[in-house]
Image 1: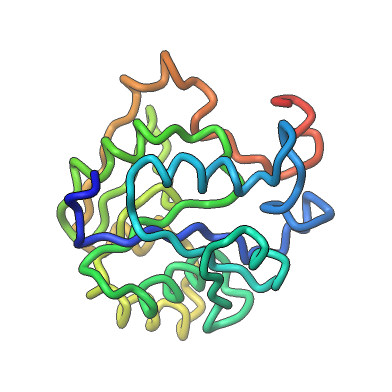
Image 2 (image 1 turned 90 degrees about the horizontal axis):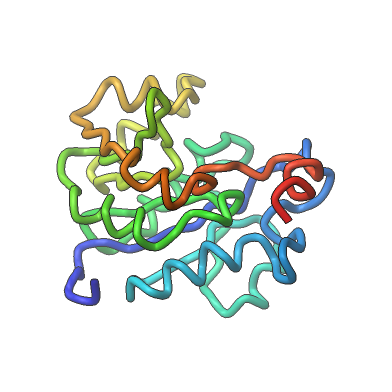
Length: 190
């Protein structure tokens, strides 16, 4: 993957984590902070990686940390922050709360990359936080935020997007897209 110089990776960790009761990305899971799993998988792909978080505690992980440019706008705000920072044509955006997502799925997504948004899809669900966004979408996302249109599905439906079916991976990686949103989720998969 090191030949790709048109894509940078961003891990979103700026959410409120209200259901978790503590910072999700830094919550211990299988002996390390949850976000570390995502960072470890990304390191296999040799991409430049940055973290989008509003807590200075993430600085200890050894990656550049960027604060949201528009606070409390959920994933849409995090993606705008990524696109605003991105120095390449595309930004791969992942969430800190999917620690079981393997590099193989990310690599497959990158290999299928085209259009304004290339997004992972399983059966009938689209995963906007396992997706690649063209940096030219920055203005469109800014308009969505200004109009308080924060649903990612709406944005995906408005632009040229490609859903990449990941069902072939689900036999081997059945838990790949599990979101750890509550302490119960963490307990279930520990």
